[in-house]
Structures are given as structure tokens and as C-alpha cells.
Length: 218
Image 1 (cartoon, rainbow, N blue to C red):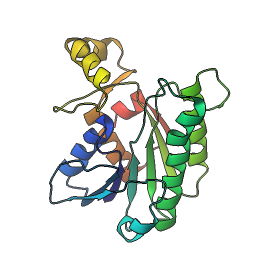
Image 2 (spheres, rainbow, N blue to C red; image 1 turned 180 degrees about the vertical axis):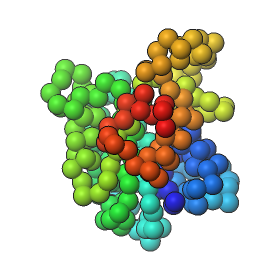
Image 3 (cartoon, rainbow, N blue to C red; image 1 turned 30 degrees about the vertical axis):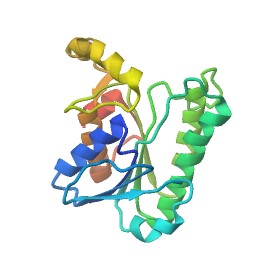
């Protein structure tokens, strides 16, 4: 399986990249982002694209893929709905369409979030935008899956690029084992998300929208 990975420098993307590089069923991984990951591996190639809305000049490098894992995302904190939509809905759909044109049989997996509003009419802004994004992806002419993890525990030294996330994780880290026992349907790890993405890309899933319990059982 050849994998295209967007957002490999983020916390979730780092975890997904780690699992892809360690899984023998993944032959090659190409990451696409505004900055390089800084990692080196025989299976890894990187595309640094300053403008992810226009990937046309990278078309030859974006063909021949079996799966695309889209892990890009930003916090909605302090953003208007228009601003958040541009980096969540507009960018995601632009990338998905471009990748789909080049790889008609691709499996596209999108990291959304627990609480996403599929009706697109709820009061929570980020949930509406995520719901709109999911619905648009599910309408595309290739196989798509939505991952909706709740709390994600970073493992293997992985860190978020957001400082206050790291501070929060550092404080909560001693509680992670307890939280997983008490809230098994709301807590997952970067490792489990990565392994689940590979499993779904390889074997499919009976549901297109996977919540935390679906992710953890893969």
C-alpha cells in the first residue's frame, strides 16, 4: 500500500506517520505539508508545498496512491466561522478533489472530531463546519471514511505544535491510564489512530464514520 499523508507535522499526523513507517504492509509514504517533518526513512518522501490549495505542479508526485490520510487541522479558538471554514472545509475539499482526480480508486480518510454535527445546523461553530466537511467528502466519487476521535493521548515522544496542548497533556499525563479505564469510549492514542487508519485503508469498514470505540477496536 502506498500512502499519501497530509499534516504529518501535527500531533495526530506524527502518530500516523510513525505507524505507516513501521507497518510492513505500507510500501511507501509521501507526506505533503507547508514544512518538512525532519524525519528520514527509506520509505519516506516529502513534498513541501507552500500553498496547499494549489497542488497542480506536484501532480506527477501525487499519483499512484492507494490511500490518503488527511490529518491537517486547526483549533477554532479565536477564529470566525469564515476563517475556520477556509482552513477546514475549503482546504480539505480542495485537496480531496485534487487527490481523487489523480487517484480515482483512492481511499480517503479524514480526521474529524468527536461531537461533529452532521446536520450542519447546530449551535457549535466548529462542529457545524466539520459536519459540512464530512458530508462533502462522503459525497465524492471515491471511498471516504471519517475518523472522530475524542481525547487523543500522544505516545512515543510525540508532541503537539500547540504549546498549551503540550502543557495540558503534561499535567494530565499521570491520569491517562485512569481516564482510559473510566472513559474507554472517549479516549484513544496516537498509536491507535495510526493503526486504525492503516487497517481501514487495507480492509475497509462497515461504517463510514468511525467514533472512538470503532478506532480503538481496529
